Image (tube, rainbow, N blue to C red; front, side):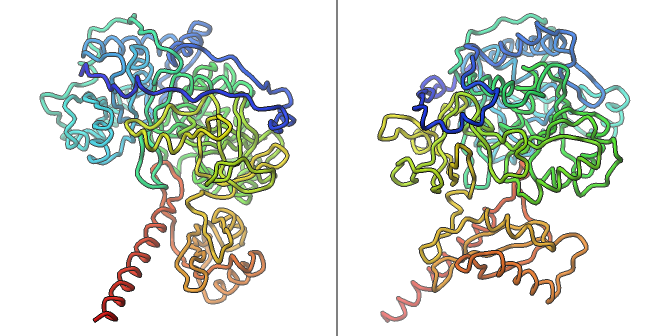
Length: 591
């Protein structure tokens, strides 16, 4: 401890810009939403403290049946800040958090920020190698974890470990039951610090380190669908700007409302949209440490959240669960969908299901990526039945560019989606090459984050087509897997699907579909025939599937996205095998 990660101080925020009015065609859809907003100069802790001073007695965090007011939460943040100082943590030091959504993890994130250090947030179920990579990447020598992850963290060899039982903030009865069931034979090594020992004797007033809005605040990791995870450094401004933008983007996010904070805090959507933004807007966060798909409906009925943020797989699970009655979802005013593509079919199904449960909620689809904190565009009110991913948040600019030349493309033409705005990351930690590849300076001198997603602008509204890396080029035609999946999922027999490219002797590459059938649908020759006929009637001839495979379930990443990379890897193995065969054939001919 006491060692800075020197790379943080070398990182610079993206250059801001303002485009000509004629390019900002999305402004026509803003209505009452302002084009520009004012953002705080300081840290994420300071923005939270402002809300604490406005409503100290209001509920801030709920964990099972334990509730922390804003005042009580701030006192705990200060206790943890003093404990960190006592351990010797210094400014710009990386402190690793390997914990689920629980009060102590939230206290830690703000306490680390308050003393000028950087929270290195990783998945609580990471394996030893992933933990080792995360701490080595940022020179972190201190990690906080729980009894659930302790053994794995210990195996990773991090020198200083503080362990906090998941039950720490549970009500007494529940805590007792949890400890009896989950902590049998749990032993910690003598050099491990327990949470109680860590905070013992620490006061409720702690010194603050002055931080600027462009200083590093939190480090999260890119998802696993596109390859190796990278450490994404987000500034104070990234988090605070998105929180303030939520005032304009989602009017229901206001004091007295509540947020179902089930999305994990190791992800930007979970940490900023489902925790930091609602807290800074005076809302209560209902912390859920582990998503139990089968109990999501019961949780919504019991906890009565105003806003439910979810990835599509969660929404699908909710609609597949038992309907708990006409008033069970009455409290829900907004459903925030993000993290993955939400098909038209599932969107309609979700709306109908929530209506049957007494909710008049509308769906807001947020599009973005971890490198831009969370979402930077969102669908407008009343656009549930329109196939788009919305308009930019205030002070956020988008362009669709040629992925090779970076040239700006006209309306309606598909290219790479690029963004400039206050929520864009500082960069990837200790990886200047990848940072420069992601954040590029174009010929006109403007800087843009290249998302790796393909889409197009039409009358100021952004449309998504596919991941750039997923695009299939077949006989010179560009085929977008997401579009095919959206069509395929409308077939009455199909529950979900994923489309990948496979080798084809004539077309070089051709699409292949992997399908999960709906419950109760048996795979028969007749069903297969009808699915193929559906494809023939609804998909262009040049994009017809070369193969259709059936499976019981699609694999997902740690945050619930469909992990198409698994199928891409199988495709890569097939290519490698073909290359070996070709090489052996050439060698044989020479002999």
